[in-house]
Length: 193
Image (tube, rainbow, N blue to C red; front, side, top):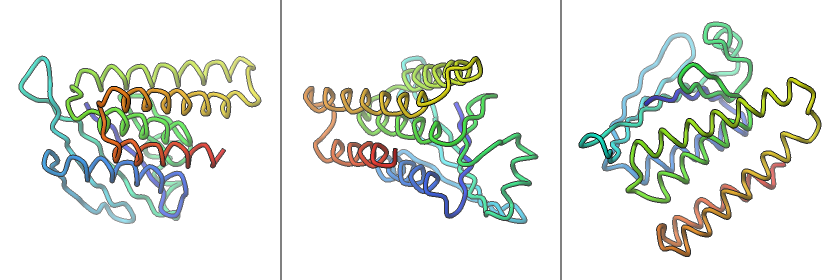
């Protein structure tokens, strides 16, 4: 399972996503392999593989690439990779941009950091649900349900995540420190809106 994040240097949303992905790296430093390469003229690509528990095999890997893109090269990258805006994430053949990418990264972070025993299959299932709901939201926007739907959807999603996080804390599935880290990110996202 692989995700590719395209993050723009100096962009606020890209910085939030980097922070979320860095949190994953810190939490799972003993289960992460990392490599880095520079692609001329202006991309740095970090590839990370997190070893996860699996119900089907001994273990599976969640692989994600993070492309750090300089402002001057964003148009070229957008053309070659079919990206319409930054930040962006590619999951399978689907590409999502903007606040959707923050939602995906924060959901992934909460799922994995919230429970270190989360299986690869649970993550794959959750990513499928996320992408499906985002596709449905885009289709609704295309047929005329515009306006505040994006803001309301984002707030509702974050409120749902906070409720789930509260429940995980009550059930002792996450520590208070993990709870504080994740809730801080969610509150920051709510303030952004």
